[in-house]
Image (cartoon, rainbow, N blue to C red; front, side):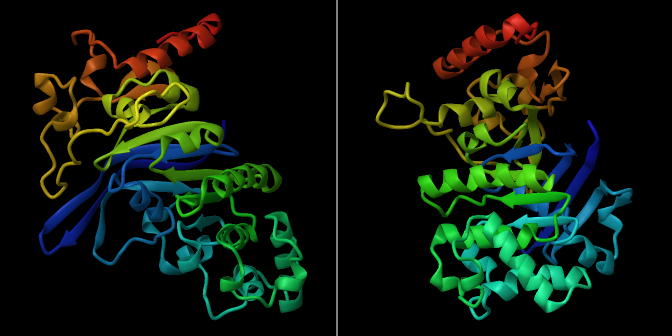
Amino acid sequence: MERILDVKNLEIDFKTYAGTVHAIRDVDFHLNKGETLAIVGESGSGKSVTVRTLMGLLASNAQIVKGSVEFGGKDIVHMTERELTHLRGNDIAMIFQDPMTSLDPTMPIGRQVAEPLLLHTKVSKKQALAEAVRVLELVGIPNAEGRLKDYPHQFSGGQRQRIVIAIAIINNPKILIADEPTTALDVTIQAQILSLLKEIQTKIDTSIIFITHDLGVVAGIADRVAVMYAGKIIEYGQVDEIFYNAQHPYTWGLLEAMPTLETKSKRLYAIPGTPPNLIAPPKGDAFAARNEFALEIDLEQQPPFFAVSPTHSAATWLLDPQAPKVTLPPEIQRRHQIWEEKFAHKGVHA
């Protein structure tokens, strides 16, 4: 498949009064044309910082220590502000988490949707507003033409998120970044927005990077999944590989925390402990202190990536040939069994 984005060896620090926070630590991933890549992890794992780098939207106290972000034959890390201004909203667009903070409460939504088109093209205001009507209809806003002069507070939460999506897609970006776009919405509206994103992806032929802390959300939208923890990607694979053949104990914890029809306990599982302080990252595996399956080497040395399949790898010492076999949690055993039953006939094994 054609790669549209390639992130290599990305490291980002933040200067704070308490010290230097090593927020992103040697992150590598790529995005293929027309696919959806989900980046999953707890709050503070580095998901949002990583994708904001793609648009040059890092805070003033952030420093890219090393790495590259290759897009369209150029390295975004070394782009000028003028080049980044052209990139944002044109080639790469972003849907933020809270639509009320993304929209200007003092400006009619018609002007807000048309603004990226006026900024990046030479169309007239009349043409831009006509295109705004088209994309508002595309995202499901009823009577779009009649509501161009309405303000954000006159729309429901789900409609406001649809308007934010319309702003992001009006220039047909090559990459659409969705940063937890459904967190503030109820479950029914959340499902509608996820379905809308997949529909739009097909219609405008874009690639999507979907950021979430909820592994369950990505099941119906992602092609591949990257699991992040403490500023690093720790597991990487196709969506079925992550859901049914996960290999990293942190991914197991995320899967165990998901409610399913088989969940009988009144209390959901929660991963014990808290993420490490990234002012002084652990010498070994950052998840070791929370990992009931941790080995002695986890405290001393960061694990490399071990290949599980050509499309699936995980950074855990449990995959080392010399590692002892462990008894998997019941939920993970169940998922691995589904994997074997569903994929063994295709010649793919755990």
